[in-house]
Image (cartoon, rainbow, N blue to C red; front, side, top):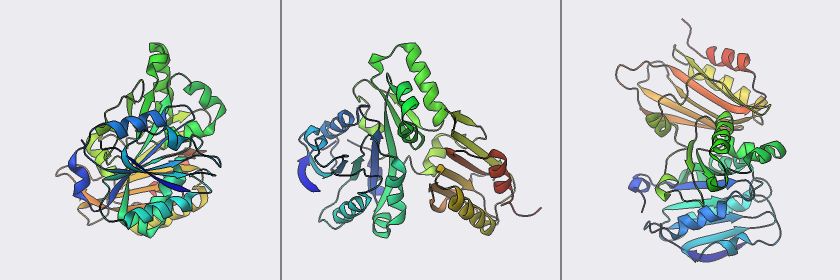
Length: 338
């Protein structure tokens, strides 16, 4: 483990100042997709903000840190393990240490190894109390190799997992693929994750304002921009990754919901990659936003229901081996009795 001072300042919307919690962006993508190229672009743009960068490499000796351009950022390298397994404790310690430093970072960027499953990284911001109170998971950004994605989906489940967890997808190396290939790749991506924002790129040439400080992991913001985000529709990928969503019209009994979702996550959490929902509780004028990564769940009240809008509860699951009838029956059973 080593901390190496490096640097860069990149002009962002001023949303970071609206909260005391520091936004965290997880940058993931399969080996060779172009994560480091995208990170270098972020670090060299003139955005006027200061970011701490955490780079994870799978191996005893790292090279990614040497590939990151000189910048004004703080760059930390985690070696000898994948961030999603053996060194997650290191991530908690680094983030916790950053919170104790004088001065303030405008954000933290975590670049995972190409073999990482983003779920445990996201879980870090649920499970550790210090990290949870001082930071907020802003978005999972996944870089996808437009030319080689079909091959990666055929030989690596990690590539599908990284897409399934994404809030923002950078479809990179589009200059190497034909129009027909790009259309097919986007179709495959949408089968895995119908909700993420997709940006086409050649060498990670996506505006920083479209990647950082997005609030994309915030379900409230997603629904504000995409009202049909949780519409009831099923999308399947390969043989086992699917997205399923359900809507009910009667208010949700919070005790029933907590008992059901707790049991569901305990039993099927390893198969449930992402769970998100907006719930209407009886006698409550605010919407309750629920989300989970595998077995780690979180939720809170968000803005009020729009005047005149139906107070319907909706939930979406992205995962493997999902039982649609069982999930539907379970969610429907959480409604208050007629």
